[in-house]
Structure formats: C-alpha cells, structure tokens
Image 1 (cartoon, one colour):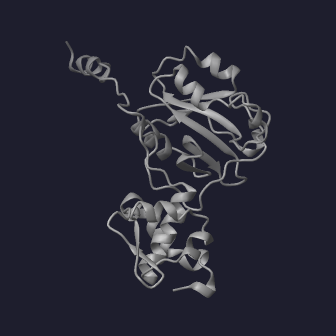
Image 2: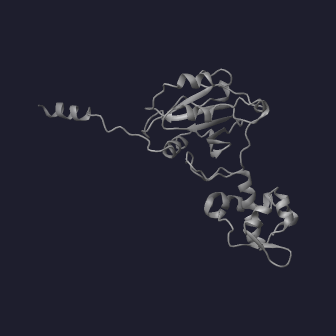
Image 3: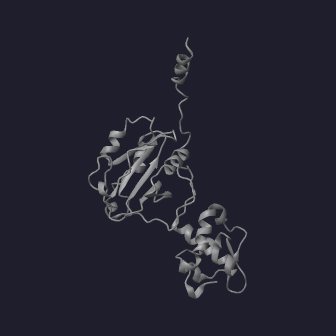
Length: 256
C-alpha cells in the first residue's frame, strides 16, 4: 500500500467520542464560550445560569442537563400559577444540553416556549453552541427564541457569583448572603455588631444569636462566636469584591 494512501486511511479513523461527564462541565464550557455581550450569573434566580445581555438587561434563564427529560423541562418552564402573571422572570427560557443528546422532547420544549441550546464538546469549533443567542434587533422576530414578556425581570446581584453552575447542591450568592457578608466585614473592621446593623441590611438577628454565630461582649455589642460561618471560604472572590466596595454600600457617617 502506498505511504500516502496509508496516511489517508489513518487520518480518517474517527477519534473517541468526547462527552460531558457532569452538568458542571457542560455549564463551564458554555459560559466560557459566551459572546462578550453577555454576562453569566451562575445559580441565580432559580436557574443554573441566568444570562444577562449587557446592552439592555435582556435575560435568559438556563437549566442544564446531560439528557433532555421531563424533569429539566418542568424546571425551565414558566409556572402556570395564577400569581405568576405579575411574578418576575427572564425574557426567555432555555435548556442547555450536549449536542449529542437525544432531542426527542425538543418539540415539547418548543410548545412551551423553551429553547434547546446544544453544546459541542470540542473547544476548537467555530460554533461551540447553537442556536445563536438573540440580539436586540432580533426582538419578537427570532425563530429560535420565544419571549415570555415577564411583568419584571429577575433581580441580579451587584457581583457575579463566584460559584460553579450546574452543581446538585450549589452554594448560591443570594441577596441574604450578600447582606451577611457585609455584616461579617463590618464585624471584622469594627470588632463587634449592633442590632442596628441587622436592621440596616434587613437581616433577622435571631438566626445569628440562637445559632451562636454571635455572642454578647458584655458592652451591648455582639462578637464572633464559635459557630460563625466562614463566608470568606464560601465566596473568596465575592468577599474581596464586596469588601473593596465598602465605601459604596456603607453610609459615610458609619464608615469604620
């Protein structure tokens, strides 16, 4: 057999099929491939990923699954409850899945206004996922996306959560967690907390005292107890970001 012919046959042998092992890897690959016009908020608003278009705040709520099934469709779908008419939500809803996954239920998704985003495993693909994300000019005229027209969009934190998306038991940067981190920063700077601090950030103090997160210092203040959570370990990046913005969220009259 000629050398060139043998080389051609070898090159035509398909490589071992690549697959995502967990939803975490699927989400990470998708976030890494996002266009610069979009910001991904992991584990936000009840979704694995909440996409926000920087230009106008347009939102897409994304649930990730290695296999398209009824469970993930229910998670991604808009709730039919009567009160949900005025409830907040994203502009569009989607399910993220590998491009090799079965699409038998994609028709059901289409009927429910859910877009199926298919992610390729190969990182060198010119189009790592499809369909394309909607652009402002596509509004109300995009065959792949179905706008829910929510009463209002989901609230997003001032800092992008430093957590992975798609975990079965995710650590989330909730608005309560942000307030708790602010209280922890004040405690570190001042050395104690007061009841007024909890009122300022609309946080119930009972959980902190009953759980022995805080103990009284004998002078009307509360100091760190034995069971105080390690918020810095849970959110190392966000903790530094929030601390760096201390002058912005703390009233000037109370700066430590």
